[in-house]
Image (cartoon, rainbow, N blue to C red):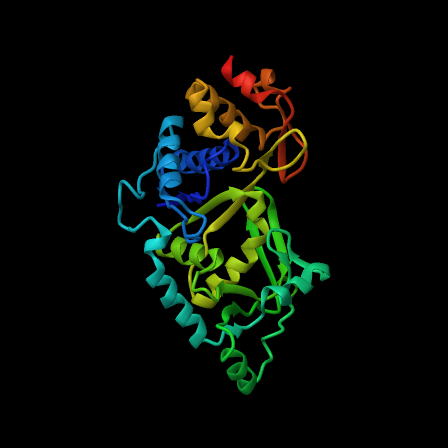
Length: 317
């Protein structure tokens, strides 16, 4: 049985770009008779809000998307909220530590700021960490630890990490060029990279379909799967929806959030039809039956699908 998931972060309201990814993941599982889970990724407690989480669930239901397991429905892999799953992240961290995959990092924000001009490892995460703290002696670590609590960094393997992306084909990254990355911050917060790997493995997720902005985080996650002895899912990374300038949609732009569209009288069937047409477009440049949408969207790259018309006006027609 194939299992997929949609895992929004409740740090703002869903916009149509988020809904596009949710629909694509939903279609993937519904077409193959699989199971889809909804998991709330609220690991960043400072930015996450319970009110946003509730609105996200309501907005997806309004749009017509359902799921088999989730925060409200429960399921065999509960809890479906990351903030309630921290004990299993700690277990994974300890396993990594015992296997020698971690080291304490005492670098401050100012230390890391010096990386601004260094070669970048991942576009989504900034400059690659050059390993300042990896080679510290025990005495140096004790001295630094007396002054500052460390974060925990994962040692990236010095080898190529390749995988077949379901939409983009074979992808390959050089592990040593990506830089070691934090799996637990000095303030005790677990990283997205660790949490998503542990959760997907624990929930038996077989297929991960998500936006192109997360493509270059996949090699880090695959390295974690390998280090923890876990089975990795199959990955597919689809284009992001972008505005007429080519910039990706932001939760800070309220005009294209599902909540705003609902308040302005947009019919969910009209929005869902538009998003479904776009899901077809990523496979064919001009899918049959959507010629009227041509002025609204255009594919500009593997990473972005840009809308160039007045989308709100079209949706309200």
